[in-house]
Length: 474
Image 1 (tube, helix red, strand yellow):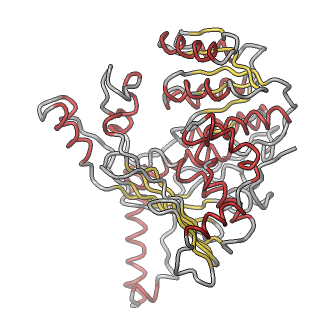
Image 2 (cartoon, helix red, strand yellow; image 1 turned 180 degrees about the vertical axis):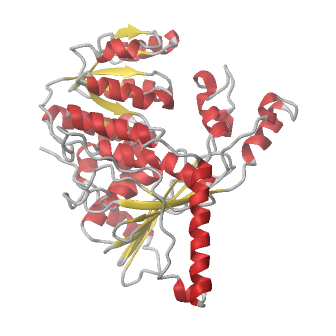
Image 3 (cartoon, one colour; image 1 turned 90 degrees about the vertical axis):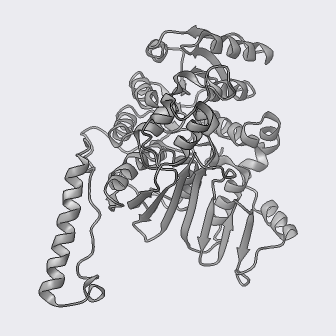
């Protein structure tokens, strides 16, 4: 499972190229004549290990119902503060512990609880306070909102202490961490969910409902993205809007090149395509543009001789990753946080009978007039008819509470609802592992000129045991 060197895989690629050239020369055929006989095989950089003895898959895992879900929130920056606010609206949830290395963040969270009429929570300010929290008998759910590097370590440790876990995205930064999450969840039979809020966007949920009811026919291709100009936040210094602890996110853009944040675009379309519930992602290719935006912005803000302007940022401005599934579907995921562009997750589904897209124009086209958008009135009517039942149930409350228009609240509501009723979660550890693993898999492909890279089967053969994604209700 350890990552091999980039040069090693470049040598494999060159060997493949040389081998194909030899075939062409010896057969005397043109490339088009021999392409089917000598295909380029995706390289298995990361093998799928055998499931350890005593472990079973956790597809549609059910745990004992919890009357009141006692929650510990670790990390109280922007996302953590929002979680305190949203969870305070959910009757079956109670926040019992708060942890952050910045005492002021805990003070703000305690004030939120007080304003909501909720009791104060225990406080932890030590860097490893999360270990003590995970050992508490009165904690059911560890809710992780720290910087990315701690997501997987805290999740693994907490499951080992018998806790259910929900973590902000990404759940893992490497394929090895993704396997750690899977193996720990299978061994402990604890829930592990990545908090992919975009799956609960009202349009995304409506199109999921449409897809499951066959409105688009067979979905053949889907696209998603995280296109979000974050330059001002990435370089925000203390006291400036958007500043975050230790500027850790900028370091990831300095050190890595690939699809660093694929989950927002990938999550909703993965569920529409029933990934690991009847199909699975087989391999990817990934290519990045050069890096221009971070350097240009740093020069404008800090000056050409500044430390920020002279750094060698690895992350190309635009990364494009193409994924092919076992059943022949294709997925395009893009990542760009350094270009002056309007925000977009794209969210596009293209099937044999219809098409839907959210950005830059929200629209749906259906047979027999697939070449024309539905009128605004027809679109509104269709979205009403296919409103997801969960949105019908809690959408009004979600709009009131807020959080990216309400999708954040639906995400938290569903998490607590399923734990309270002992139901399978909407997202499982395999979602967390698969979507997060794209980060390192794309890095390998980018470093090797877009080399096809196999995607590990985190279900270890169980991907076709289910036939569709199900969001369970009582």
